[in-house]
Length: 403
Image (tube, rainbow, N blue to C red; front, side, top):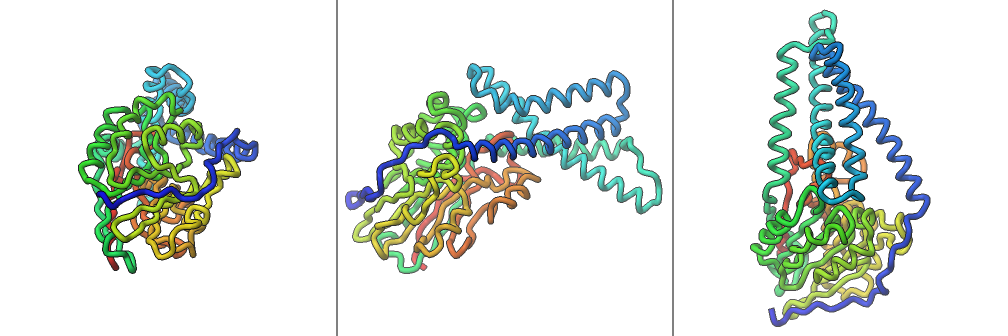
């Protein structure tokens, strides 16, 4: 529209991130050690139950343990593969991440069957047999196979369009019906490439948004390595532009390269700063905070919603882009009308959603967090396993309406 313009905020110059601090590396190492122990123990449990439950002995049992060890190793090869040639890296990613999803489904299914078998034996007053009955074997298969197939179809398919009206008190008439299309957690890389990105862009552009908000985690891998796969994002079209805030994966994969790439694609990069959009006589503040954990990588990237809205015109509605929902606890009292977040993937697949809730106050959808209204996006792509169960990928179209 002719009466629309974007005005730069008066924020300080963009900071540059340096090396990862030792404290952050130590915290990551401690987390990795705990995760290694849990994953290893879970693999031993699954292998021992499958081998005993199916009655495998001798060479067959040995093969089962060797296969389990190889599958366990594949999880780490998937993470280490980024430095390898692209074709080999893709193969290792696909294999390792696929096993990650199957492992989660097997862990839940085998555990559920064992629990039910133990309860049945307790009720009957009989001894619990290590070997499964045909019914128990079938139960594991029925729980795992259809879930894996449907979850992969959901993850790799078209994103679901979610249309949400957002009532805002005293919304200026010129902003009535203003539409922000949010995409988040794309994780473009070795499991999703250029064709997937192009399809996403076509879906977003078909909505003819006033603004596009990208709330972090655009890709996995360095900007130089994934550049061809994300190139179609430069074709995103919105009246007032595309706005971007950092997610934790931007820090994992070389922040300097990714900030440059986002700007090259024409995005408005918001690092604890804001832009003011004019629509007729009305003004709308679109602000962005750095990732909640950004300060762990560089002090100058600490998440500061207060700086993001500093100097914003009083009375203008305020939209805050912040990758993690828990940033809302920092944003209370700042007059934020709506925070747009992601990070959780809506849990992505059972049972991991219960672990996400240990870190975040909400999984998905609209919620009040610390007095701030937050819309938490389920994610447009996926991380790790090509698997989505009870948490389909989404593109959110949020329409501002007068309360």
